[in-house]
Image 1: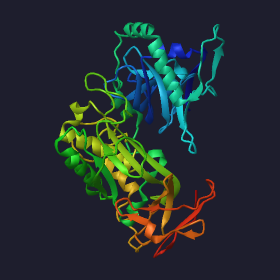
Image 2 (image 1 turned 120 degrees about the vertical axis):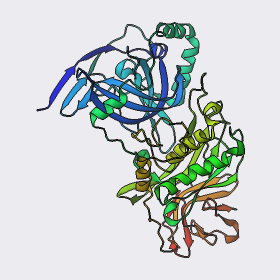
Image 3 (image 1 turned 45 degrees about the vertical axis):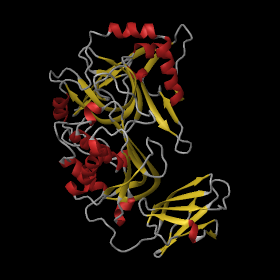
Length: 480
């Protein structure tokens, strides 16, 4: 019979200022693996939460990939419920205030108060941060002052306020840090791997956002990445290391995907500009700066995908449109080694083709790099994951298929970029019942996109209807 232990919580909400001053670490990131297990003495069940940090707002970390150790959880048929503890879900974007337990492990500061969810409006792209007070089963007592308590805000505005308070309350921040200086800070809890083993957690790959992939792979098209070699920390502009990383995914797994380098580019950063890019040195300062001692974000990948989907391996995948990888500046201590650069590049390419972090510590998609000369070498779990996304032998092989329009971009200069699949140099574009002049429609074989330059007969957003026609037939209508 299942057993359940529980506790109750009564609390007074901390103000924004108190949270910011008192937290040891403030960061944003994405939730990875979550599991629970009894400790070795069978006195408490702990829940372990992997966080892949991407923006460090306060504190010092040797690495921004951390594992939280939270009270409570379920192990087998036994559960321990600790009221007020934050709840997480794999893939969740979060902003977290963290402090350290006596053993040095990281945990959410002030229980539920230190956990915020980051969400993005799919229409406007606006990101918000929110702290839910629903269902936390905590009795909140009133404060006696009127200090600001933020539960919902626009993300960048909230981050700006955090930075402003850190500057304004610098003396109090220094005093709080000094008070914690004797407490160790451990990014991966002691006994983490043993706890995973006891929990029966099965290491396995994970898919980004439930399933995203390059649909072009099914018709034999290569996915092309343009490289900006400026500020590359190894000789040759990283060409050899990137080539090894690109070859690793299809060659070591047999997956039906081909990655290739395109031409050099002067573009850099995470801006979505119509092509896949790899750049070095974080030219636009979009990554958090490294801290002393070779610590901080090493590389960051962002992807864009559409809501159009196809079922592969029994999973509904959305269509990848664009990917960007940026390597940080000041991390030559890691990236200046050829094998390390190839390993990190292979990991980031894994993200750009649809894989999230694996729970298998032997996988190249594990959240921590391995080093020690591993280079671009896949693990068994990586191979299993990429074969689910790009099954071996899944090439269409039946000749050209009907075009598929996945996205359209309109530039103010009278330029229309059409993103999709199965376009050719002779494809025709029909926009609002008018066929665009063939001489003004150019097919880019590198990206597989159609580009029209000329007069556009456009109506208000949401009323324009477009078709692309090739020798196999017509696309479905695309409204934008």
